[in-house]
Each structure stands twice: as structure tokens, then as C-alpha cells.
Length: 208
Image (cartoon, rainbow, N blue to C red):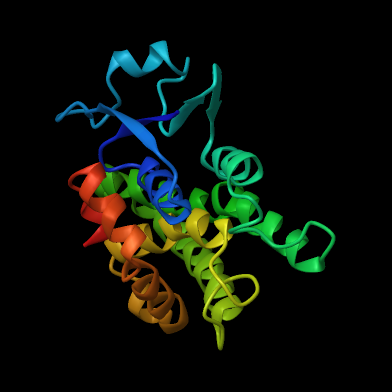
């Protein structure tokens, strides 16, 4: 049985969605952020030394990092679903999106969040960060133009991995500038499996 260590209001929501899309049985261990610091509780450190989520355990193996979890679950449990044929160019594009989400796209968005907390002290950094946010969101929007999904003609793990990028952009109020990306995340949020994952995972402000 797959066990998901789920931190509220976090990237682990997309792992619940992945498992619902595949119809896999799983259990959830809930972890709550500290209301003041927004950090994960110390109990999560017992599972992952960095105290980060998502983390899954499966048959004695612990896997962390969203992209690695998505790749692991699809390889081990999906029976060919949610990923292109590994012998095709679509598979290479799929792998690129799995790594791009956290390796590149999320960095300016996270910097933007931290700079916002600095108030006036962060003002000198804002133009460069906003430029990078626009650069990455424009890139994703262009990749989605005229397409329903990032890779191929059906949902893949790449869409699930990249969904968090769009959700954070929406929370910052900038997503309407990128209509293809906005339409894409609205389609993803309309999927029954996404709604089921939301029910199981609990409150998730980024899904509003």
C-alpha cells in the first residue's frame, strides 16, 4: 500500500491527484504546517530529513521530490498510463516537463513569494524577479497554445507535475495574462480525479 505523507497547502496535493487518476489504493498521513511559520512539523523530519513534503512510502521504500514520486508511481504502478512510450520523442518532452517544473519554473515564483514578505526591503529585487516570472510563464503559455495537454493528446504526469506552477501563478494574480495556461489549469481542475483528491486531502487554497 502506498502511503502519502501529506502536508496541508503543499505540493503533495498533486500526488494525491496522481493516485486518484490511476485509481490506486493509498493511505494518507496528515501533517499540519505551523500556523505562524508555515513550516512543516518536526514529525515530518522522521520521514524525510529535510522535513519536506511530498513523501511516499511503498513496500519499504521511501521516495521524495514530486518529480521522482510521479516518475516512480507511473513506472511501478500505472501499467503504461499517464506517460508516453519511452521509445518516442514525446517521452523525452515528458521528462523535460517533469524536471523543468521544480528545476526552473518554481524558482522565480518562490523568490517572488519571499520578496513579497520583505516589503519595501525587497523592492530592488522585484523587477528582475517579475521579469523571470513572466519569462517562464510566457514559455509555458506558448507551449500550451492550441493544445489540451503539455505532451501528446492525453493527460500525463507532466501535466500533474506542472499544475502547481499554474496554481501558484494564479495565487499571485498573474495567470490571466497567460490565457492558454489559465484554460489548461481550469480543465485540469475540472477532472473528477482532481476533485476526489481535493476531498481526500483537505483544504487547499491553491485549488480555489
